[in-house]
Image (tube, rainbow, N blue to C red):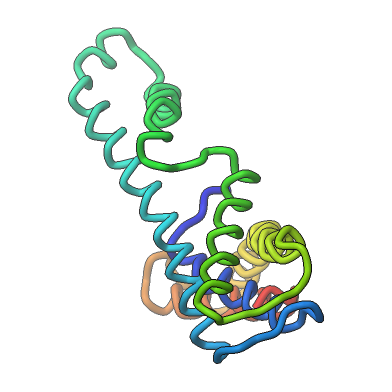
Length: 183
């Protein structure tokens, strides 16, 4: 699943919660500062992919006439172009590797800046962070679906895209994430 900026606060909180609860990690700074740095690192990675997507869109828009002429599949061309440019933008398109790289960046930063301390193998901490990200991603889809289904059962019909809908959806979504232990 593609990471989005709206996911980063939730993922950051999940990572922080798991680090705090890990018996082999010593927390040396405030919970909120750890969460903030995790979110910053996640957003930097997400921003790279946004920039890549924009570059791909620009390339394909410039070739729009030829794409139309040859009746090429835009999505397939988008993906092929994105794959070709990914290394140039520093984006790993393999989600498992990408989450591992993000986990490594978070762990390195938190350790080097003395947010956390540990005396176990680096991989143990990196895997803890990567598992936090993976667990959130798996739970995200379920929580999203459950929140959407609950909104459909409301007596008062909410229109998607309205402020009321967004507020109710956000509240239900967060409740589901809490129930799943993701935040």
